[in-house]
Structure formats: structure tokens, C-alpha cells
Length: 433
Image 1 (cartoon, helix red, strand yellow):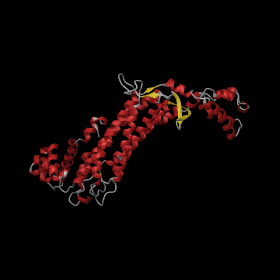
Image 2 (spheres, helix red, strand yellow):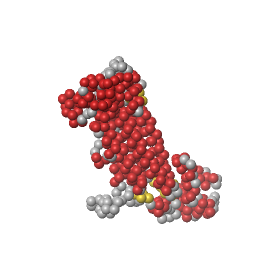
Image 3 (cartoon, helix red, strand yellow):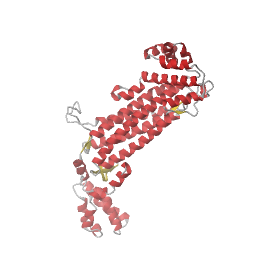
């Protein structure tokens, strides 16, 4: 996590002050439940809420001596609460606090990320409808295929991020569990009702069985989901980067007044934001692997996962939050060039209509193999002329073609609008009526 790629709301969630506040609430809610069960005095539970306080600097000072963060925290709180603090943490173990806190942080991080995705979806939808029928070339293998619209490109991205939203909702549900089960998870020294109370207060579900720690398959799924979302960020970013290449230049990142593209070449306008997003996506994906490796802990618990999660928890969520925000800005301000799209469509002399001619010949009685051969031999002449020769002209002069198709029938096969007759259907599927 570095300030350059972070935003305040998500950063604040992972600050020590926020973490210790969640720890305090876990301990205080647990003490409330213990008081209701008659295990500790109700006056003690009230005193913890009334007098409980902590100081990050003091906790760090104590930890340097005791070498245990939860003990350092409890010691500092006790310094403020007084004698009643002895009833805190009754029957609990450190993982009850640490794992439940991490669940709260990841759930809250998910809420921020879901809001990010919603903002991105809004931006994509607006631009998709703006260019619903803007013709452009569809490419496979980077080579001209057949016509599409720029709106359809964006509709695909919208559908993908809607799926990502559903994945994140599921991942949030998966991660948002509470464990207050004591040493090795048996509830020997604490009633399961305490866990139920804390879970309800913090908006979590009860972990059905925690072996002192919450099972890390939950975390593996969560960070894998963040990796998938990051991959979608990269997919859309790479599309924009390709479209901004000088030879293509169908879309371009906004270039603000006074912006400089190169220290050496004053003419440069580089896709720096989407290149940055490609790099950030690589980082978010890397956090998924150690999360998966954390699943296999020793017996009921070890702490090999702890150092990993202290890094990947904040880093993955902060980085993805920044990336989603940046991508939203790119889409909102994206410069789109319909005239250049049309120019590129016309670049190769009508080759993009070859399939329609192929199909017309097969329907006119020529075998598919012969139809393919006839169209391809003409198409290759266009290709080798770099689009200087028009495919339609060659076909009109080919007796094998004209024996089956009139000039008018050939011309109809070069109608661009033919390719867009189902755009409304696709938009209805993606966006609804």
C-alpha cells in the first residue's frame, strides 16, 4: 500500500485506530453477553463501555515488551477501565478477536468496493447508450473481423462487471463470519450465545465450526474474487490501450490541458492510466495465491496466515478500490472517435463483408468449400493491395460469382446496417427493457 494508489475511505478502514476500535467493540459486546449469562457482573460490562479507551502509541509501547498485540491492547484498555477490566476476554482467545475483526474489515471493504462497481457500471452504461449504434470494427486475433458497434463493446464490459458485482456480494457473505469459540474452538470456557450476540451486533453470521480460527477457504475465495474483478479491470483497460494506438486511434484517454506525455517527444499522448490499471491488476491477482496457501494450517491453528493477511488485507482492497475509481474516471472522460472507427471499417476494401458473400453463394447452390475458395481468392487480392482494391468490384467481375448473384444482390451483402439488426436485443438482455 502506497499513498499514490490509495483513497482515504478504504485506507481509514485499515488504520490501527480503526482496527483497535473493532477489537474494543468485540470485547465489549462479548462482555455484555457474558453479563447477561451471569458469568460476569453487569457493572463490569457497563464500565468497559463507559471507561474503555485505548491509545495506539501506548499499545505499541506495551507490545514491544510483551511481544503480543492482543495482550498489549487488553493491558492498555485495562489501564483506563480499572479493576472491572479483569472480566474482559473471559474464555476468549486472541483469534476470536483477530479473525472476527478481519471479517468486519473485509465486509466493510466489500461495501466500499460494491459502491465502486456501481459507479463504474453507471459510467459504462451511459457511454454504451451514447454509442449504441456507432459502427466500429470487431477484431479477432487483432485482425479485422466483422462490424460491431462501440456500444456493444461497452455492453460486454457492463455485463462482465455486473457478474463481478454478484461475485463480490457472494464473497462478502462468505467472509462475514464471527468466531468467539475460545481455545481450539470447543466453547469449553465460553457459551456459544456470546458468539451469537457479538455476530448480531457486528452484522456477521456465526461461523458453524471454527478450529480456534475461521477456516481460510473463506478468505481464499474472497481474495480470488478480488483477483477476478482486477482481471476485468485489466481486460477493459487493455481494450482501451489497443484502441488508442496511433494506427487505430478509435478511442483515447482524456488528455488534460497542460498534461505532458513524454519528456523527450512533445507530441506523445500515452494511455498511462490504463497502463497503470494493467499493473495494479497484476498486483491484486498476486494476493490471491498466498490466500489460497493460507488454507492449509496446522491442526486447529497456527499463525503462518497472520503475516500474509496483515499485508494482503489492506493492500488488495486498497489497490482494487483505487483501480475501480480510476477506471470509472477513464470511462467517464473517454474520448471516442466515430469518424476514425468508420475510416478503419473502410480500411480494407470491404473485406469485413466476406462472410455474407460466402453464405449467399452457398444459398445460391454452390458448395461451402467452393464458395469459400471463390470468396477467399478475391479477398486475398484485396488484402495484398492493402485495401486499394475493393472486394465488391472484384466480385462483380468474377464470373463464378455473377453466375449466381446479381450486382444488386452483391451490393446488398455490403450493407453495414445488416450487422446491427440485433443490437436492441443484446442491449435488452444486458440492460433490461
